[in-house]
Length: 291
Ligand code: SF4
Image 1 (cartoon, rainbow, N blue to C red):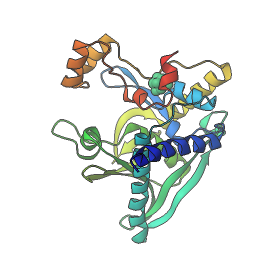
Image 2: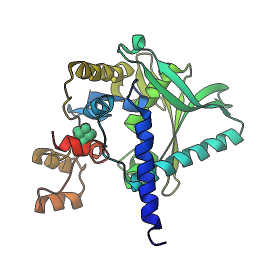
Image 3: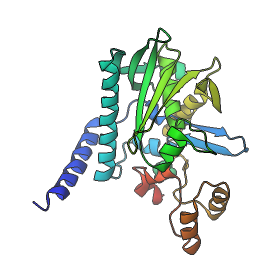
Image 4: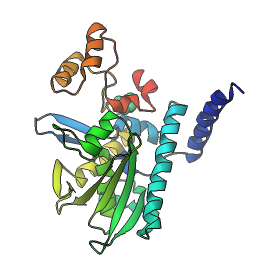
């Protein structure tokens, strides 16, 4: 059946559309909705994490672009692998509880709506004789291997900032000193574990070191910002660039953030797409382009 693969792709896409329709309207903030605006050492202000404009459309239940079969396979494979890695910890007798649901109250967050989520697990650390949190993540590709797992001569590896923000919420919800973010590469199976804790004033500490200047309250303040836009029925500005303006491309190229090949293509053809990765993965890209 030569058409089998095409039919499989269509089935995947259709099932996902049906699944999403069953979720209904969003009622709570989620840990993956976390975001922050903060100043880098070079003085530039940067946004990290979820785009408020995308979240606004999520809350308004505006239909999103369908996820293609490739994207769905990437997600399914990652999720299955994360479960299998957690099974190893269970076999070792160290998994106390997996897929643990929790909530943070509006009173604590300063918001109208609560935050609800689910952690991957709580594990027993026999070396420290204490319970710790577990967040299992997988990824692939040169950037994942270089920035998150291995690093290179000029770059020390670090956890993804959006994962750290998720875990800052978990650390608030659970009475544990440490959450372990375990990364496994789906390419070469490289691996890395980061121990994330919260300082007394709410900064994330990665293996005991503060990498970013923001606190968990700064993350919650963005939920408050979003709720204000929702109350006013006002579309938030874009947090990310679909296409960088020329000045940003030049600045990012100078800082080594845009590689030689895409920069060369853009020089020959200024419509060549170079923007933030958040937009290229965004389910509202089609809509956002029209606004
Ligand atoms: S396309 Fe980019 S700017 Fe627009 S909603 Fe999505 S992430 Fe935000």
